[in-house]
Each structure stands twice: as structure tokens, then as C-alpha cells.
Length: 196
Image 1 (cartoon, rainbow, N blue to C red):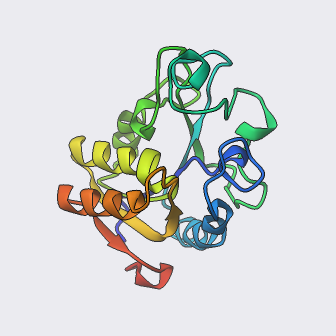
Image 2: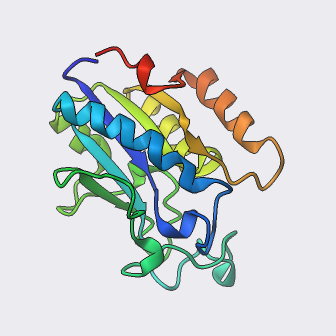
Image 3: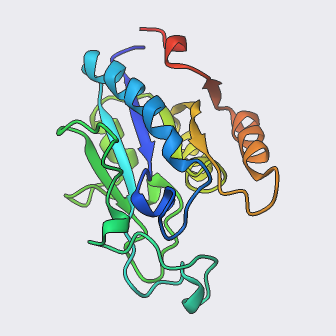
């Protein structure tokens, strides 16, 4: 990895893990893999970003207001908190998405940091040219973040061992991975594949 790399962790929040309001099957299993990537990026003093769904109580994202999903990751709720076993360092930059009532917020690039700066701008400010993306869920927020990262001109590597999908339809996750790779992303399957 070069000094121009960053780790982007997508939505590893309680509501997307077993016991949450919108659980991804085996969603909690991304945590050990992500923690290994966090350790590597921390050792190399490379930036780490963590996105989160951060919805208001009323949003077009939820079924009651025309969306697909049950209420989840409501701002300030326990369900919106990052998994306690995710070893995010203090200096990780938190990016919040889906905050407006009329915003879906699937992509981390739709989100902003605590100062209101968008993810793309924040990455460029850190001289990042390649992002390594893992988290939840493969077929929604991970896919959209990867595709948007490519559209913004970043190199993108999918951390295939650190993603899990919703699978509204069987095979959605595999189709999402194929779409990301066709769009120009590459992938690795283990932290050992990182070139330091």
C-alpha cells in the first residue's frame, strides 16, 4: 500500500447485525476481518473512514413513508451505534449518510463528516487515491460506495472477506460483486493479500 490508500468501513452498525432491526445474515462476521484491516492501516498510519446510516425517524427510506425498509439506524439510537467489537481507532473519520428525510443515503459518498465535508472531498484532502472497502451490506451500501468511488476517480479494492449481503433475492450479493468488478474495482480475499 502507498501513503495514498485509505480504509473505508461501511455501516457496521447494530441494526445491520444479528438482533438488529434490519439484520444482515452473518453481518457480525465482518468484524474480525475488518479489525485485521484496521490493525494494518493503523500500523501504516493510513486514514480510516467509517460510514454510518444516520436516519431521522421519518424518511422516504422507511416503508411507512414509501421506502423499502423497516425503521433502522435512527439517529442517536442503540441500533445506529457501531458494533462494540469493531476496533475503530479514535482518529477514524465518521461519515454519516441518509440524514435528510428525503435522502436514501446508500452510498458513503452521499455522507458527510462532522464538519459537513463530503467523503470524496475528505479523501482528496488526505491525498487518497485508492480506497479499500468492506462492511455492510454487499448488495446495497457497499456496492453503491464502490461504484461511486470509481465515478469519483478513486481506485477501489473490495475486501471480499469483510462484506456480507442482504440478499432480498438469492444471488444479489454475487451479482453486486460482479457489477463492482465489471465497473473497474478489484478485490482481495484476505488481509495477507494487502501489499504493504
